[in-house]
Length: 416
Ligand SMILES: *Cc1c(COP(=O)(O)O)cnc(C)c1O
View 1 (cartoon, helix red, strand yellow):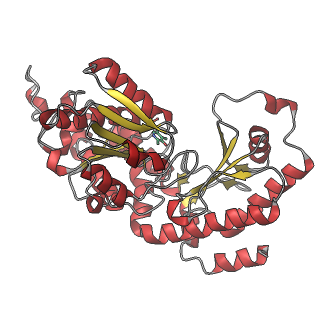
View 2 (cartoon, protein in one colour):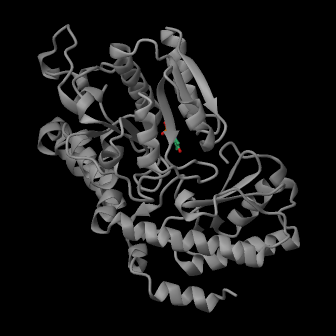
View 3 (cartoon, helix red, strand yellow):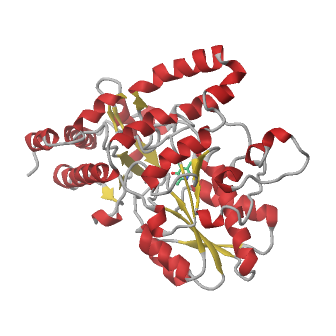
């Protein structure tokens, strides 16, 4: 039997407990949506002021040089490298995950065309975050060349689908809905043995668990900075390319920021050597600068500790739901086995939308995903075991008293 006191004891032993004070979270709020939009780091507001007033207001155009604006995509990429197991000058922060998917899809398929022109099939998960599929469809629509999409319906189908026609596999390290976690090393290995390339989408794993792209010898990776990394709404994404491909191919969004000598202003595109060729145009500097506030918090701890706490909290969440909400209609869709679970927990419930809305009205913020899924993001740096206890008590209350069943919850918000 788990009690509130036992949760308190776990918090007393929690090595990461003090990190909560580095975030600004509204009073009486239990934030279970940091996997969708990370919380605000304490330092971000002052830093935003400084960037606007000092760097932009006073520095004006000089700040491109004096404030490191020009180098920012690689500078921040090198900080992200430390939490995704990459070396320096292999990662850039730029654009959106969607756009970075387009660039990496194009590069990967160009690499395959050099040696293996018969490989025309791209494997992607039916249950991917939709933009991964949409960007692939957009790319194929543009280039044709007989490319074909082969959907897998579950992780188990990957191996049977891989064959000598497979050019590329696009996988989410952690699934945005179910929280299913792939074993990156073994899956990358299987894909490579088959002669295909892989793009890992790290949106729901970066900042949530240890990642080692070099150890896995992955090919490409993309990911968000506004989820677990707390970069702020719409903060630019990142892109990593295995250095063995850096100078082998170019990407098609060949804007001037990826040029070898952008300020020569020549009329021919000459790609920069290395990872800079994955840049396209001018970056949103204010939004991009703020990424550092969140990143620096991560760089002060280590991902093994974060993972250990994430497991402790997700285990607690699932055990408490088993204990407190039995027979109330919730069906766990997240793997129970730890090694297959990322850092969020999702339940199917026929009345999921109303339940989430009622929880939000009580300050317990999770989110709703189709079809009828309640999703609870577990961010180890600003959640405690007591928070999980209190959240589950409220879920139980709402399920029992029927307060989810309100007229106003029958109309969906634009963003769920
Ligand atoms: C959040 C998320 C994205 C978002 O892409 P944007 O282009 O930043 O909107 C992409 N892929 C996955 C798996 C995600 O979870």
